[in-house]
Image 1: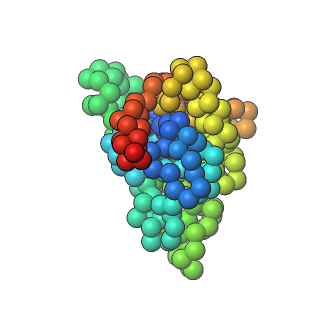
Image 2: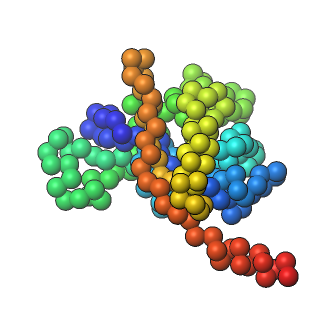
Image 3: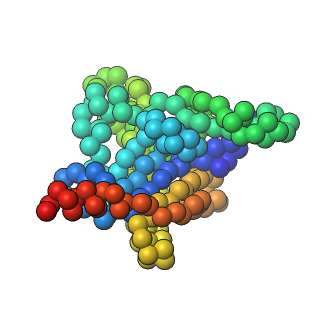
Length: 210
């Protein structure tokens, strides 16, 4: 993560799985799936609004099929660690210092520009720039559409390598720091790799097909 005034959080964090239980369109289950959100990963753990996409098809976002669905499914808050002005920020544990912030806070911290689009007040069209007046929506367009950070490519490689190393489908947790300082390189942080359990699903499919 990074310090933003009295708060600490990564630009975004997420979970990726090498096996996709619910593929759509021409996606294949073995191509994997990812969930990512602004700020700390608690948003995803709680099952709150987060972006779901296939690392192989990062621009297929079924949850954003219309303006209405984009607004309804877009993340509108995020978690950060309150640094308590440097006075023992973790004295009572992480939970006591987690704070839910809003998109306005991320925009003040100059983080939102890396992840957001705008539903324009003038024409109700989604624009991939914060230079317009309107509702901010977390589409990850700068990252997935304009590739300001090679997230999809990194996740594909990380999932392939992890699955080969472990010999089974895997789940990885990650965080990314994107900097506004041109002298600092953006960072992909691999936090955890663990095996996925998919036997029950495969057994169900076997029974249904026989």
